[in-house]
Length: 188
Image 1 (spheres, rainbow, N blue to C red):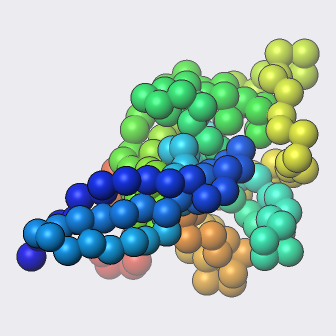
Image 2 (cartoon, rainbow, N blue to C red):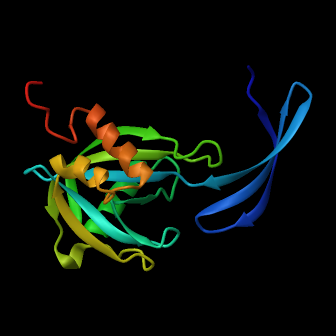
């Protein structure tokens, strides 16, 4: 099996969040056209308080016309600055600053149609910023900060309170890093 090489890209539609591109692919004399989304990378932050609560945000998602309980996160403005983006998003969306940061990993949100990556960070040693030190948030977001015990995350997933696929991937990476999202079963 061989991969395809992109021979040309043609923007079809530009939006501040992404560009839709028509791409011409080539492989061993074969040609194919596809449509792909070119997007900046994203970050998620798992902000963990010393007592085991995780800081989440509840916000309205326009495409599904529903509220979602999510981790703070957003777009990486400049390539290679995902840690800086994580710090900014944590402060903007929750009002917290972290004393310690640990990169948990990255995932590709949907490599079939979009070319970006999501990097997930664990933030600990949290400090709530005074209101005058909090950066302004995104004018298009209405956010409610919600703190829940980390051990309740599987329940919130099971009930559909958390249903965003990238949140599930982020909590999975947290579990791989040795921070289980649920207590060990009895006898384990």
